[in-house]
Image (cartoon, rainbow, N blue to C red; front, side, top):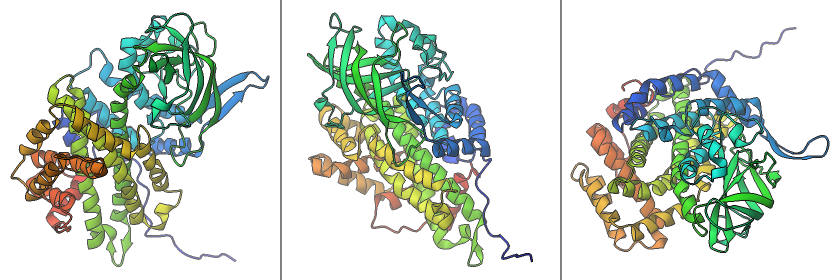
Length: 544
């Protein structure tokens, strides 16, 4: 007897084989507007490749098969190595080939490289987030190393600038491409790196570029398979920054012992380790006592990448929800045509519009070099962007999951992995409160911050009463920016910066809708149908 229980219908197909760049009009507009238009053809090619079913499957495989710690070889020799699934290596090859780890540092780079690189980073985030960890640390560490790399490692300069991914276990000077990690936090301190206990004593003499002996531990040692790490340790002069290679100049392994890999909620594809330094060798970067300052030189860039990564995850979650609702029927209509779902998706699209405009204005500020206004912009708005976007990402992905219902909650969907990925960007490189304290510190110690804000926000004064009211309220708070209000101040700064960009560059009806919904919680939260249609078309690449 043959049993035929039911026919499967009204089940949408997964979102495969789309162009992640050309389907995102706000992103295309922002790249062109902020100086990265010369990279549009490359970005379209990257977006097409990353949107394929094959690329998305690599992301799934890399997370379904997390890295393994190999402490010993069969003969009992210490390895302290990490084994990855082949999908990880293929993803890393793509990232390095697209120069997401070093595009702005190339000698022949064009103006707008930070903008182009931000778009490339954001596109990769939609496919797999764990591989972005080594990329962002290498990106941030490279300019510091190019200025301070000890002479004995001069042959590292060329592979740092290459577009090759090289996973071979070799000294850095013998490789075609290099990756750099970081080791800062310890068990007793976390973000309070001044409480670090790892000790560094010179082998011979003190000073920049000299070799020191490190004894201690790191509670989170990011990407332990990297070719070198920048490590904080205590010296007579205070907390200092050291270049700690995996292999010593004579080809011997450095004395970095991996104790275990972290079993993390998300970011499963990426290895994070606990390590001990048993007389490991490290070379001093800068002067003794300058360690925190050196690490903070990198911290701004890695924090910016946290915001970019969260936005990329949000964009992917939204794309999945939008694609699903175009196909799924309920109560006699496609979900996309149901008024309540349409309002929900419209609000999500509006949130992404504001974030995209804000992030790419911030990318241009990173491009700005020593320009005083641009320097103030990135100093203040980088931690504000990290706090706001990374916090908003968690409920945003949950909302996208609800659009799919039960199948969005199951592991066959991409959404559970995206949801688990979201919190790491809010925690890594300083959790939310640390970002808010950094914003308050910038307001208190950096000259010209309030003047910069006045110039920035007064330029759009009079275009939206919701924006004007929010700016007046923030100005009153800034007369006495107490720590207790740090989160409120930080969020308002990020939202006003987003609104200012939209008032400058988006159509007035959509910009006003964003200001009404995001800046005035007392106002009407409904979007008129014409604005809804435009938002959803832009979000799907229909009216770029």
